[in-house]
Length: 446
Ligand code: NDP
Image (cartoon, rainbow, N blue to C red):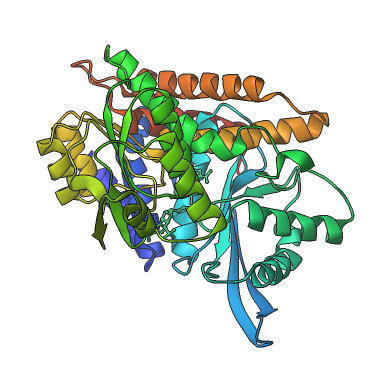
Protein backbone atom coordinates (compact mmCIF):
# COMPACT_ATOMS: atom_id res chain seq x y z
CA UNK A 1 0.00 0.00 0.00
CA UNK A 2 2.85 2.37 0.86
CA UNK A 3 4.16 1.98 -2.69
CA UNK A 4 0.82 3.03 -4.17
CA UNK A 5 0.63 6.03 -1.86
CA UNK A 6 4.22 7.06 -2.64
CA UNK A 7 3.67 6.66 -6.36
CA UNK A 8 0.55 8.82 -6.24
CA UNK A 9 2.19 11.51 -4.12
CA UNK A 10 5.22 11.46 -6.42
CA UNK A 11 3.00 12.28 -9.40
CA UNK A 12 1.16 15.02 -7.52
CA UNK A 13 4.47 16.52 -6.33
CA UNK A 14 5.88 16.60 -9.85
CA UNK A 15 2.79 18.24 -11.24
CA UNK A 16 2.49 20.84 -8.46
CA UNK A 17 6.14 21.68 -7.91
CA UNK A 18 6.65 24.68 -5.66
CA UNK A 19 3.36 24.14 -3.80
CA UNK A 20 4.48 22.38 -0.57
CA UNK A 21 1.31 23.10 1.43
CA UNK A 22 -0.88 21.64 -1.32
CA UNK A 23 1.28 18.52 -1.56
CA UNK A 24 1.18 18.19 2.24
CA UNK A 25 -2.64 18.39 2.29
CA UNK A 26 -3.00 15.88 -0.56
CA UNK A 27 -0.51 13.46 1.02
CA UNK A 28 -2.37 13.47 4.30
CA UNK A 29 -5.66 12.62 2.53
CA UNK A 30 -4.10 10.10 0.14
CA UNK A 31 -2.75 8.01 3.01
CA UNK A 32 -6.27 7.35 4.31
CA UNK A 33 -8.10 7.29 0.99
CA UNK A 34 -5.91 5.07 -1.20
CA UNK A 35 -6.39 1.90 0.91
CA UNK A 36 -10.15 2.60 0.86
CA UNK A 37 -10.19 3.11 -2.93
CA UNK A 38 -8.14 -0.03 -3.55
CA UNK A 39 -11.09 -2.05 -2.27
CA UNK A 40 -13.57 -0.22 -4.49
CA UNK A 41 -12.87 -0.64 -8.23
CA UNK A 42 -15.52 1.88 -9.35
CA UNK A 43 -13.66 4.72 -7.61
CA UNK A 44 -10.32 3.41 -8.77
CA UNK A 45 -11.25 2.91 -12.43
CA UNK A 46 -12.89 6.33 -12.67
CA UNK A 47 -9.74 7.94 -11.26
CA UNK A 48 -11.77 9.83 -8.67
CA UNK A 49 -8.74 10.72 -6.54
CA UNK A 50 -6.70 11.87 -9.54
CA UNK A 51 -9.63 14.12 -10.50
CA UNK A 52 -10.22 15.47 -6.98
CA UNK A 53 -6.66 16.80 -6.71
CA UNK A 54 -7.05 18.83 -9.90
CA UNK A 55 -8.97 22.14 -9.45
CA UNK A 56 -11.95 22.47 -11.78
CA UNK A 57 -10.65 25.98 -12.42
CA UNK A 58 -8.18 28.49 -10.93
CA UNK A 59 -8.53 32.18 -11.71
CA UNK A 60 -5.67 34.66 -11.19
CA UNK A 61 -6.19 38.36 -11.68
CA UNK A 62 -4.57 41.78 -11.29
CA UNK A 63 -5.87 44.06 -8.51
CA UNK A 64 -4.75 47.67 -9.05
CA UNK A 65 -5.80 50.36 -6.54
CA UNK A 66 -4.74 53.75 -5.19
CA UNK A 67 -3.45 54.19 -1.63
CA UNK A 68 -3.94 57.20 0.68
CA UNK A 69 -0.80 58.85 -0.67
CA UNK A 70 -2.26 58.78 -4.16
CA UNK A 71 0.14 56.06 -5.35
CA UNK A 72 -0.84 53.08 -7.47
CA UNK A 73 -0.45 49.67 -5.81
CA UNK A 74 -0.84 46.32 -7.54
CA UNK A 75 -1.80 43.08 -5.83
CA UNK A 76 -2.64 39.65 -7.13
CA UNK A 77 -6.11 38.13 -6.70
CA UNK A 78 -7.07 34.44 -6.84
CA UNK A 79 -10.09 32.16 -6.79
CA UNK A 80 -9.60 28.40 -6.85
CA UNK A 81 -12.83 26.60 -7.78
CA UNK A 82 -11.85 23.14 -6.67
CA UNK A 83 -14.90 20.88 -6.80
CA UNK A 84 -18.61 21.41 -7.50
CA UNK A 85 -19.81 17.78 -7.37
CA UNK A 86 -22.19 18.32 -4.44
CA UNK A 87 -23.02 22.02 -4.73
CA UNK A 88 -21.76 25.46 -5.76
CA UNK A 89 -18.17 26.31 -4.78
CA UNK A 90 -17.97 27.61 -1.23
CA UNK A 91 -14.99 28.78 0.80
CA UNK A 92 -13.35 31.84 2.27
CA UNK A 93 -11.12 34.63 1.02
CA UNK A 94 -7.74 35.16 2.69
CA UNK A 95 -5.90 38.51 2.56
CA UNK A 96 -2.34 37.95 3.79
CA UNK A 97 1.11 38.62 2.27
CA UNK A 98 1.85 34.87 2.30
CA UNK A 99 -1.05 34.08 -0.06
CA UNK A 100 -0.11 32.33 -3.30
CA UNK A 101 -1.69 29.76 -5.60
CA UNK A 102 -0.29 26.75 -3.70
CA UNK A 103 -1.65 27.90 -0.34
CA UNK A 104 -5.08 28.55 -1.83
CA UNK A 105 -5.09 25.16 -3.56
CA UNK A 106 -4.34 23.49 -0.23
CA UNK A 107 -7.13 25.44 1.46
CA UNK A 108 -9.59 24.75 -1.40
CA UNK A 109 -8.73 21.04 -1.31
CA UNK A 110 -9.37 20.85 2.45
CA UNK A 111 -12.57 22.81 1.96
CA UNK A 112 -14.01 20.21 -0.43
CA UNK A 113 -13.85 17.51 2.25
CA UNK A 114 -14.92 19.82 5.04
CA UNK A 115 -18.00 21.02 3.18
CA UNK A 116 -18.99 17.47 2.39
CA UNK A 117 -18.70 16.52 6.07
CA UNK A 118 -21.23 19.20 7.06
CA UNK A 119 -23.92 17.32 5.14
CA UNK A 120 -24.92 20.55 3.37
CA UNK A 121 -24.93 20.89 -0.44
CA UNK A 122 -21.71 22.87 -0.90
CA UNK A 123 -18.75 22.28 -3.20
CA UNK A 124 -15.31 23.62 -2.30
CA UNK A 125 -13.27 26.66 -3.25
CA UNK A 126 -10.96 29.26 -1.75
CA UNK A 127 -9.56 32.60 -2.81
CA UNK A 128 -7.79 35.71 -1.69
CA UNK A 129 -4.91 38.03 -2.28
CA UNK A 130 -1.39 38.85 -1.15
CA UNK A 131 -2.80 42.20 0.06
CA UNK A 132 -2.06 42.86 3.75
CA UNK A 133 -4.86 44.78 5.49
CA UNK A 134 -2.63 45.27 8.57
CA UNK A 135 -1.66 48.92 9.01
CA UNK A 136 -3.98 50.07 6.20
CA UNK A 137 -6.65 52.73 6.69
CA UNK A 138 -10.34 51.85 6.26
CA UNK A 139 -10.26 53.88 3.06
CA UNK A 140 -7.38 51.83 1.64
CA UNK A 141 -9.04 48.56 2.59
CA UNK A 142 -12.24 49.72 0.89
CA UNK A 143 -10.40 50.75 -2.28
CA UNK A 144 -8.61 47.41 -2.41
CA UNK A 145 -11.82 45.40 -1.79
CA UNK A 146 -13.67 47.33 -4.49
CA UNK A 147 -10.97 46.67 -7.05
CA UNK A 148 -10.74 43.00 -6.02
CA UNK A 149 -14.51 42.53 -6.39
CA UNK A 150 -14.65 44.42 -9.68
CA UNK A 151 -12.86 41.40 -11.16
CA UNK A 152 -14.08 38.60 -8.87
CA UNK A 153 -17.78 39.35 -9.47
CA UNK A 154 -17.59 37.68 -12.90
CA UNK A 155 -16.94 34.30 -11.35
CA UNK A 156 -19.22 34.21 -8.30
CA UNK A 157 -22.95 34.23 -7.52
CA UNK A 158 -25.44 32.59 -5.14
CA UNK A 159 -25.69 29.44 -7.31
CA UNK A 160 -22.12 29.51 -8.64
CA UNK A 161 -19.52 30.31 -6.01
CA UNK A 162 -20.09 31.92 -2.60
CA UNK A 163 -17.00 33.34 -0.87
CA UNK A 164 -16.74 34.20 2.85
CA UNK A 165 -14.03 35.46 5.25
CA UNK A 166 -10.75 33.89 6.39
CA UNK A 167 -7.46 35.33 7.70
CA UNK A 168 -7.48 39.10 7.13
CA UNK A 169 -11.07 39.13 5.91
CA UNK A 170 -13.48 40.00 8.70
CA UNK A 171 -16.76 41.91 8.85
CA UNK A 172 -15.20 45.15 7.56
CA UNK A 173 -13.79 43.50 4.43
CA UNK A 174 -16.95 41.42 3.83
CA UNK A 175 -18.98 44.65 3.98
CA UNK A 176 -16.88 46.39 1.34
CA UNK A 177 -16.76 43.30 -0.88
CA UNK A 178 -20.53 42.76 -0.68
CA UNK A 179 -21.25 46.46 -1.29
CA UNK A 180 -19.24 46.43 -4.49
CA UNK A 181 -20.75 43.13 -5.67
CA UNK A 182 -24.25 44.52 -5.12
CA UNK A 183 -23.42 47.73 -6.94
CA UNK A 184 -21.97 46.00 -10.00
CA UNK A 185 -24.62 43.29 -10.28
CA UNK A 186 -27.53 45.53 -9.30
CA UNK A 187 -29.00 42.78 -7.13
CA UNK A 188 -29.11 41.88 -3.45
CA UNK A 189 -28.42 38.16 -3.33
CA UNK A 190 -26.56 35.81 -1.02
CA UNK A 191 -23.36 35.73 -3.09
CA UNK A 192 -21.17 36.19 0.00
CA UNK A 193 -21.59 34.86 3.53
CA UNK A 194 -20.42 36.34 6.81
CA UNK A 195 -22.57 39.42 6.17
CA UNK A 196 -23.73 41.60 9.05
CA UNK A 197 -26.92 40.24 10.64
CA UNK A 198 -28.75 43.46 9.75
CA UNK A 199 -28.07 42.95 6.03
CA UNK A 200 -28.55 39.30 5.25
CA UNK A 201 -26.03 37.64 7.56
CA UNK A 202 -26.84 34.73 9.84
CA UNK A 203 -26.93 34.84 13.61
CA UNK A 204 -23.97 32.94 15.13
CA UNK A 205 -21.81 33.15 11.96
CA UNK A 206 -19.03 35.13 13.71
CA UNK A 207 -19.02 32.63 16.58
CA UNK A 208 -19.56 29.51 14.47
CA UNK A 209 -16.03 28.23 13.83
CA UNK A 210 -14.83 28.70 17.41
CA UNK A 211 -18.06 27.45 19.00
CA UNK A 212 -18.24 24.51 16.61
CA UNK A 213 -14.66 23.57 17.46
CA UNK A 214 -15.48 23.38 21.15
CA UNK A 215 -18.68 21.38 20.48
CA UNK A 216 -16.52 18.94 18.53
CA UNK A 217 -14.05 18.64 21.41
CA UNK A 218 -16.99 17.99 23.73
CA UNK A 219 -18.16 15.15 21.49
CA UNK A 220 -14.67 13.63 21.49
CA UNK A 221 -14.37 13.82 25.25
CA UNK A 222 -17.92 12.55 25.76
CA UNK A 223 -17.16 9.47 23.68
CA UNK A 224 -14.21 8.84 26.01
CA UNK A 225 -16.38 9.31 29.12
CA UNK A 226 -14.81 12.70 29.86
CA UNK A 227 -15.84 16.38 29.56
CA UNK A 228 -14.33 19.80 28.95
CA UNK A 229 -15.35 21.31 32.29
CA UNK A 230 -12.35 21.99 34.50
CA UNK A 231 -9.78 21.35 31.75
CA UNK A 232 -6.79 23.59 31.02
CA UNK A 233 -6.77 24.78 27.43
CA UNK A 234 -4.01 26.44 25.40
CA UNK A 235 -5.11 28.44 22.37
CA UNK A 236 -3.03 30.05 19.62
CA UNK A 237 -4.31 33.00 17.61
CA UNK A 238 -6.45 35.89 18.78
CA UNK A 239 -8.57 36.40 15.68
CA UNK A 240 -12.08 35.28 14.87
CA UNK A 241 -11.67 31.55 15.50
CA UNK A 242 -9.50 31.91 18.61
CA UNK A 243 -11.75 34.50 20.27
CA UNK A 244 -14.94 32.45 20.02
CA UNK A 245 -13.22 29.17 20.84
CA UNK A 246 -11.96 30.84 24.02
CA UNK A 247 -15.44 32.23 24.77
CA UNK A 248 -17.09 28.81 24.45
CA UNK A 249 -14.36 27.11 26.52
CA UNK A 250 -14.90 29.61 29.34
CA UNK A 251 -18.69 29.17 29.10
CA UNK A 252 -18.23 25.41 29.42
CA UNK A 253 -16.12 25.76 32.57
CA UNK A 254 -12.65 25.25 31.09
CA UNK A 255 -9.64 27.46 31.85
CA UNK A 256 -8.02 29.22 28.85
CA UNK A 257 -4.35 29.82 29.61
CA UNK A 258 -2.91 31.29 26.41
CA UNK A 259 -3.66 33.28 23.26
CA UNK A 260 -1.26 34.57 20.63
CA UNK A 261 -0.71 36.59 17.49
CA UNK A 262 1.95 36.51 14.82
CA UNK A 263 4.47 38.13 17.19
CA UNK A 264 4.16 36.08 20.38
CA UNK A 265 1.85 34.60 23.02
CA UNK A 266 0.52 35.57 26.43
CA UNK A 267 0.24 33.13 29.35
CA UNK A 268 -2.38 33.95 31.96
CA UNK A 269 -2.14 31.20 34.62
CA UNK A 270 -5.34 32.40 36.34
CA UNK A 271 -7.27 31.78 33.12
CA UNK A 272 -8.58 34.38 30.68
CA UNK A 273 -11.93 35.67 32.00
CA UNK A 274 -14.90 36.98 29.95
CA UNK A 275 -13.83 40.48 30.94
CA UNK A 276 -10.25 39.94 29.72
CA UNK A 277 -11.49 38.28 26.55
CA UNK A 278 -13.63 41.36 25.83
CA UNK A 279 -10.41 43.36 26.05
CA UNK A 280 -8.78 41.07 23.46
CA UNK A 281 -11.77 41.43 21.12
CA UNK A 282 -11.60 45.21 21.23
CA UNK A 283 -7.81 45.19 20.97
CA UNK A 284 -7.80 42.95 17.91
CA UNK A 285 -11.00 43.91 16.08
CA UNK A 286 -11.25 47.65 16.70
CA UNK A 287 -7.81 48.88 17.62
CA UNK A 288 -5.87 46.31 15.59
CA UNK A 289 -3.30 46.14 18.39
CA UNK A 290 -0.80 43.46 19.48
CA UNK A 291 -1.46 40.64 22.00
CA UNK A 292 1.56 41.87 23.96
CA UNK A 293 -0.62 44.73 25.22
CA UNK A 294 -2.74 42.17 27.13
CA UNK A 295 0.32 41.09 29.13
CA UNK A 296 1.14 44.72 29.93
CA UNK A 297 -2.43 45.51 30.99
CA UNK A 298 -3.06 42.40 33.10
CA UNK A 299 0.48 41.86 34.28
CA UNK A 300 1.10 38.36 32.99
CA UNK A 301 3.85 36.66 31.00
CA UNK A 302 4.47 37.38 27.31
CA UNK A 303 6.73 35.26 25.10
CA UNK A 304 7.97 37.18 22.08
CA UNK A 305 8.32 35.16 18.86
CA UNK A 306 7.08 31.93 20.49
CA UNK A 307 4.03 29.68 20.29
CA UNK A 308 2.16 28.37 23.32
CA UNK A 309 2.68 24.60 23.02
CA UNK A 310 5.21 24.22 25.82
CA UNK A 311 2.63 25.34 28.39
CA UNK A 312 1.14 22.36 30.24
CA UNK A 313 -2.47 21.73 29.21
CA UNK A 314 -5.17 19.08 28.77
CA UNK A 315 -6.45 20.41 25.45
CA UNK A 316 -4.59 22.37 22.75
CA UNK A 317 -6.45 24.37 20.13
CA UNK A 318 -4.19 25.70 17.34
CA UNK A 319 -6.30 28.50 15.86
CA UNK A 320 -3.85 30.75 13.97
CA UNK A 321 -2.40 29.37 10.75
CA UNK A 322 -0.92 26.39 8.86
CA UNK A 323 2.10 24.48 10.19
CA UNK A 324 2.21 26.36 13.50
CA UNK A 325 2.52 23.21 15.64
CA UNK A 326 5.59 21.09 14.89
CA UNK A 327 6.77 17.63 15.86
CA UNK A 328 8.82 19.12 18.69
CA UNK A 329 5.77 21.02 19.96
CA UNK A 330 3.73 17.81 19.78
CA UNK A 331 6.34 16.00 21.89
CA UNK A 332 6.14 18.77 24.48
CA UNK A 333 2.33 18.48 24.55
CA UNK A 334 2.51 14.68 24.92
CA UNK A 335 5.11 14.92 27.69
CA UNK A 336 2.87 17.38 29.54
CA UNK A 337 -0.13 15.03 29.47
CA UNK A 338 -2.26 16.70 26.79
CA UNK A 339 -5.22 14.45 25.86
CA UNK A 340 -6.74 16.23 22.87
CA UNK A 341 -5.59 18.51 20.04
CA UNK A 342 -8.31 20.00 17.83
CA UNK A 343 -7.55 22.25 14.87
CA UNK A 344 -9.48 25.51 14.63
CA UNK A 345 -7.05 26.62 11.93
CA UNK A 346 -6.53 24.77 8.65
CA UNK A 347 -3.62 22.29 8.78
CA UNK A 348 -1.88 23.93 11.77
CA UNK A 349 -0.20 20.65 12.78
CA UNK A 350 2.70 19.38 10.68
CA UNK A 351 2.70 15.71 9.56
CA UNK A 352 5.45 15.04 12.15
CA UNK A 353 3.21 16.44 14.89
CA UNK A 354 0.26 14.30 13.79
CA UNK A 355 2.47 11.20 13.89
CA UNK A 356 3.38 12.00 17.50
CA UNK A 357 -0.30 12.39 18.45
CA UNK A 358 -1.16 9.04 16.88
CA UNK A 359 1.75 7.31 18.59
CA UNK A 360 0.82 8.84 21.98
CA UNK A 361 -2.90 8.04 21.42
CA UNK A 362 -3.76 11.72 21.87
CA UNK A 363 -7.13 12.52 20.28
CA UNK A 364 -6.31 14.54 17.19
CA UNK A 365 -9.18 16.29 15.41
CA UNK A 366 -8.18 17.62 11.97
CA UNK A 367 -9.43 21.02 10.84
CA UNK A 368 -11.63 19.67 8.09
CA UNK A 369 -13.85 18.15 10.79
CA UNK A 370 -13.19 20.30 13.85
CA UNK A 371 -13.45 23.75 12.24
CA UNK A 372 -16.33 22.93 9.87
CA UNK A 373 -18.77 24.90 12.04
CA UNK A 374 -17.91 28.13 10.23
CA UNK A 375 -18.76 26.93 6.78
CA UNK A 376 -21.75 25.03 8.17
CA UNK A 377 -23.31 28.27 9.41
CA UNK A 378 -22.31 29.93 6.14
CA UNK A 379 -24.35 27.17 4.48
CA UNK A 380 -27.23 28.03 6.82
CA UNK A 381 -26.80 31.70 5.85
CA UNK A 382 -27.23 30.66 2.20
CA UNK A 383 -30.41 28.76 3.12
CA UNK A 384 -31.81 31.77 4.98
CA UNK A 385 -30.95 34.11 2.07
CA UNK A 386 -32.76 31.80 -0.35
CA UNK A 387 -35.77 31.65 1.97
CA UNK A 388 -35.64 35.45 2.45
CA UNK A 389 -35.95 34.75 6.13
CA UNK A 390 -33.74 34.65 9.20
CA UNK A 391 -33.67 32.13 11.98
CA UNK A 392 -33.17 33.06 15.63
CA UNK A 393 -29.85 32.77 17.41
CA UNK A 394 -31.06 29.73 19.33
CA UNK A 395 -32.27 28.01 16.19
CA UNK A 396 -28.97 28.50 14.33
CA UNK A 397 -26.91 27.45 17.34
CA UNK A 398 -28.97 24.28 17.76
CA UNK A 399 -28.41 23.42 14.08
CA UNK A 400 -24.67 24.09 14.43
CA UNK A 401 -24.47 21.79 17.44
CA UNK A 402 -26.34 19.07 15.58
CA UNK A 403 -24.05 19.38 12.54
CA UNK A 404 -20.89 19.08 14.69
CA UNK A 405 -22.40 16.00 16.35
CA UNK A 406 -23.12 14.43 12.94
CA UNK A 407 -19.57 15.14 11.76
CA UNK A 408 -18.29 13.44 14.88
CA UNK A 409 -20.48 10.42 14.17
CA UNK A 410 -19.14 10.21 10.60
CA UNK A 411 -15.56 10.34 11.90
CA UNK A 412 -16.32 7.51 14.33
CA UNK A 413 -18.01 5.47 11.58
CA UNK A 414 -14.99 5.61 9.26
CA UNK A 415 -12.19 6.11 11.78
CA UNK A 416 -12.72 3.53 14.55
CA UNK A 417 -9.73 1.22 14.79
CA UNK A 418 -9.60 -2.38 15.97
CA UNK A 419 -8.48 -1.42 19.49
CA UNK A 420 -11.38 1.04 19.74
CA UNK A 421 -9.21 4.15 19.27
CA UNK A 422 -10.83 6.68 16.95
CA UNK A 423 -8.55 7.94 14.19
CA UNK A 424 -10.34 11.21 13.45
CA UNK A 425 -8.04 12.02 10.55
CA UNK A 426 -8.90 8.82 8.70
CA UNK A 427 -12.57 9.16 9.65
CA UNK A 428 -12.81 12.73 8.36
CA UNK A 429 -10.97 11.96 5.13
CA UNK A 430 -13.07 8.93 4.21
CA UNK A 431 -16.29 10.43 5.61
CA UNK A 432 -15.82 13.54 3.46
CA UNK A 433 -14.67 11.61 0.40
CA UNK A 434 -17.50 9.11 -0.06
CA UNK A 435 -20.24 11.63 -0.82
CA UNK A 436 -18.11 13.56 -3.31
CA UNK A 437 -16.87 10.41 -5.02
CA UNK A 438 -20.41 9.05 -5.42
CA UNK A 439 -21.62 12.37 -6.84
CA UNK A 440 -18.70 12.44 -9.29
CA UNK A 441 -19.46 8.89 -10.40
CA UNK A 442 -23.13 9.75 -10.92
CA UNK A 443 -22.34 12.87 -12.96
CA UNK A 444 -20.01 11.18 -15.44
CA UNK A 445 -16.64 12.37 -16.66
CA UNK A 446 -16.90 16.14 -16.21
P1 NDP B 1 -8.05 36.12 11.73
O1 NDP B 1 -7.41 36.95 10.69
O2 NDP B 1 -9.26 36.63 12.42
O3 NDP B 1 -6.97 35.75 12.88
C1 NDP B 1 -5.79 35.10 12.56
C2 NDP B 1 -4.97 34.96 13.82
O4 NDP B 1 -3.83 34.14 13.53
C3 NDP B 1 -4.42 36.27 14.33
O5 NDP B 1 -4.25 36.17 15.72
C4 NDP B 1 -3.07 36.36 13.62
O6 NDP B 1 -2.13 37.19 14.27
C5 NDP B 1 -2.63 34.92 13.67
N1 NDP B 1 -1.75 34.61 12.54
C6 NDP B 1 -2.00 34.82 11.22
N2 NDP B 1 -0.96 34.44 10.48
C7 NDP B 1 -0.03 33.98 11.35
C8 NDP B 1 1.27 33.46 11.21
N3 NDP B 1 1.83 33.31 10.00
N4 NDP B 1 1.93 33.09 12.34
C9 NDP B 1 1.37 33.22 13.56
N5 NDP B 1 0.15 33.72 13.76
C10 NDP B 1 -0.54 34.09 12.67
O7 NDP B 1 -8.32 34.70 11.04
P2 NDP B 1 -9.34 33.56 11.47
O8 NDP B 1 -9.43 33.47 12.95
O9 NDP B 1 -10.56 33.70 10.67
O10 NDP B 1 -8.58 32.26 10.90
C11 NDP B 1 -7.62 31.54 11.68
C12 NDP B 1 -7.45 30.15 11.08
O11 NDP B 1 -8.72 29.47 11.11
C13 NDP B 1 -6.99 30.09 9.63
O12 NDP B 1 -6.21 28.92 9.44
C14 NDP B 1 -8.29 29.92 8.86
O13 NDP B 1 -8.11 29.32 7.59
C15 NDP B 1 -9.05 29.00 9.80
N6 NDP B 1 -10.49 28.99 9.64
C16 NDP B 1 -11.23 30.13 9.76
C17 NDP B 1 -12.60 30.08 9.64
C18 NDP B 1 -13.46 31.27 9.86
O14 NDP B 1 -14.68 31.10 9.91
N7 NDP B 1 -12.93 32.46 10.04
C19 NDP B 1 -13.28 28.82 9.28
C20 NDP B 1 -12.43 27.66 9.28
C21 NDP B 1 -11.09 27.77 9.43
P3 NDP B 1 -1.98 38.75 13.84
O15 NDP B 1 -3.08 39.48 14.53
O16 NDP B 1 -0.61 39.13 14.33
O17 NDP B 1 -2.09 38.77 12.35
